Image (cartoon, rainbow, N blue to C red):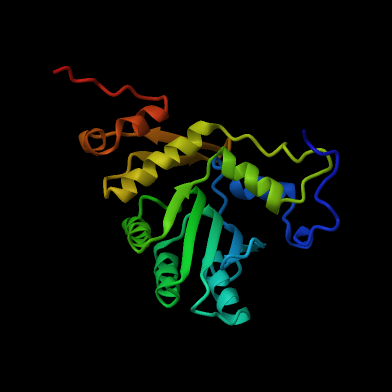
Length: 236
């Protein structure tokens, strides 16, 4: 049952929470907002305490801001493991991907999981290679699903009283299309999702373009999950 209160005033993360409107404009997968937002969780060793905070673009991308903040504020102990989870409104560009790999290579006890709302300039081959390099280096990258949106709303957003369970419900199709394109990137396949914007009506248009290689390489259940296509069955 949803609480009739917002986040507790005794919640130590309250001053670090973002406003509901910020969460909606940054993390709506249908929007192509230029600025990026990062919500993150850090957990050290076997401690159950989770440190949560948020970051936005400044003159640098949010990923670089996090790395600079992390390395400057904390005395890193190489013998203690550190688990970091990012919730990013945009996936990292190739330059940030390179910086993340360098950051992790110097800290082998740090693990990083990245959930993204959208794929940043996913047609750019350098960005695609950057994400593959991150994954090959051990970073987990996934598209945000309903469960991640719900988690972020409850733990990072200063939601109104009685609205704990009322996080924005975005159409699952957008998440599935981004997930499909992420599989194309991982498998080093050509893009299959084209994204365009009609400025007059501020509409984001997704176009699905599948080639023979997509049908051959992408698992059928991932293709079928979009609900837009039927995979032919070959009888033997």
